[in-house]
Amino acid sequence: MREKASSLPNVRLEQGTVTSLLEEKGTVKGVQYKSKGSDLELSAHAPLTIVCDGCYSNLRHSLCNPKVDIPSCFVGLVLENCQLPYANHGHVILADPSPILFYPISSTEIRCLVDVPGQKVPSISGGEMSRYLKTKVAPQVCLLCFK
Figure 1 (cartoon, rainbow, N blue to C red):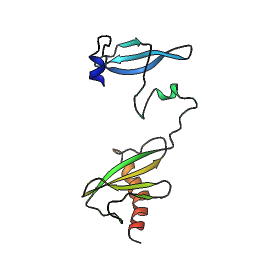
Figure 2 (cartoon, helix red, strand yellow):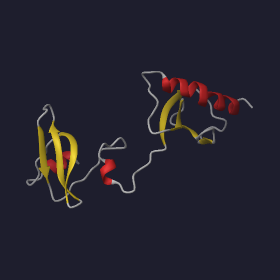
Figure 3 (cartoon, one colour):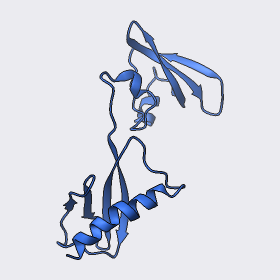
Figure 4 (cartoon, helix red, strand yellow):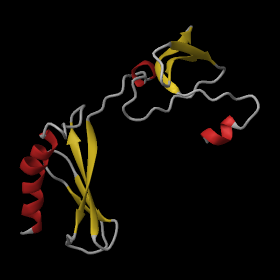
């Protein structure tokens, strides 16, 4: 889309990091941003501003009313050379405190999605994610698999 849009005669492509929205009387009229490779703060105005900066948006709080609550996040991992109780089927485990999904993605791989409660994903580098999966998730999954 970026390539197609930038090929149009009335479009100029600017890449940068948006720091805030420019608003007039409650209407978004553009953005304030830092250009790629520069600390200089710039602004761009447009008749239409589309915000599509993902689930970790730093702009969402100013766009949503009522405020968005993020009660949990899905984290995923790929399990290799495992077998599900029913081959070629997805499995939903209603675990405590939230669901866990398993489904095959190849003949040797299974995707596991764990719904982790809370506003922030546990730190991978600090070992919080590993601890959560080992102490909270794995015991429930192992119990189900070996009953």
